[in-house]
Image (cartoon, rainbow, N blue to C red; front, top):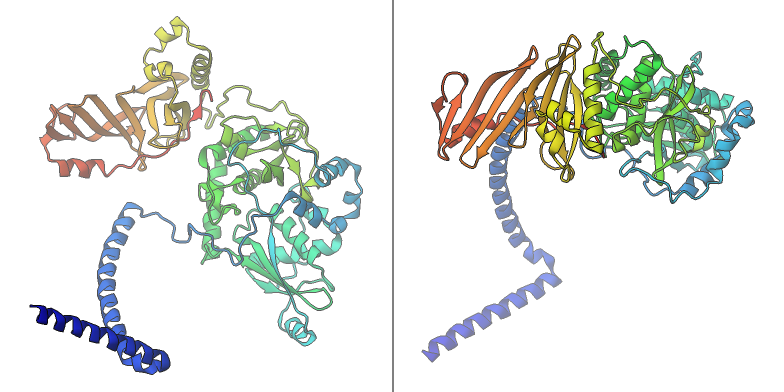
Length: 603
């Protein structure tokens, strides 16, 4: 036995010695290992092909499932940033101050004492560490260039000879009431602004500046003012590129267009049609204030604060629903200007970082409006403020030359629902007022009796949920329904509807009555789901369409006695037919619940 073990150990030792020798030879002469590498590569390639075939099959199945679930997903929108140059998120306030140069400003404006206080506040800020700012409320970025210095004279001349002006923009005019940033610039920068505008519309990415001896500051200023005046140029990225020669003159400018838009004309058509549709609800309103309130509330209701690849573009807020302060401000600016109400994109410092908001002109003067912060706080704290009232915001850069803002009486002190198509929503306003005051100060015994059906809304503590209201036209008849419901404080879970109301000739119609164990949900397809239970052994999942001020049953599933499942399409005809778990899941999985941005009764 010992002899056998000795022989085995000897063989193992010999193999180890041979391997070590082979490794040593490979180190001296790598070509020795090439045949073995080729064999290993062939094996790996064969294995990879097999895996790829399996992966392709599973990917095909997954892709089909996703297409079936989300047929309307836009292929042109990516989740990750698609910028030609990376953004710089680390600029400090001092960086902006040090970079400021007012030599590009029109002399009359630069010397106007009306703007002195804003210029001083920008260049010599006071400490505002004790100020209150909403969370996740500021994420506005300045245009950011990539600059290339061409020091070789021959190379610079070659660039000059190869690049023309593109579109010059000669003859273009911009109304000062709607395009104030253009009129802040001196004549040389105005010429560059017109050229940039014309080439952006023509989708010319590369051209030479129209002025001789153009400086980088002139290019930067014209580009910044262009984007501030024109949110409709949504495909123009805030990053851009230019080259200047050995004498410091810019000889080539290059736009960056967002890669998210492979077909810009088609995207423009979608952007413009969507914007017109959004603004159309305010077209028949009597005053600019009513239009302002309608668009403000539409934006606050529509948008969610979230970073994405287009969050500096108006496309993220007009066509899409996810953006940051820059998108909120550009959306409000563009929709109000479609309604012929002068509205400007104002930017500066807020929330201890760069921030964007708006200035609007009404018949009583100019006012500050911050849809982003109103959305964060679910109120009107930043609606139609004077500059003094808006002291948590500080104008910067060219925005210091926007008009002064005064206080306004045009503020929704209480709930005001703007009427569309002549509908009287007074009963909604009164009900919201009663519930708001009751949840804040307590309900009277008479109110508890009168509104006993509003059980959950009247009695729930709100420790884990935020209760509120939401207006929505459920059936597309032009008349809004009123929903009472809640969202969890942590933002997780589905939005629950407890009560649905309609209005009929000025009278309140109670459509649906929910409570803790009988909850309603808004489905992505516009239907209403109802989940109910009277204990662990009995539950229902029912699905309705809403029409003519009532819910009409479509289908449902019943779980009864802790063991039996039934499917029904006619609730008046018994419990329905027997089904199994798979069939139940197939019904329930068809319906996906939507998030609802309830306006809180109280914070």
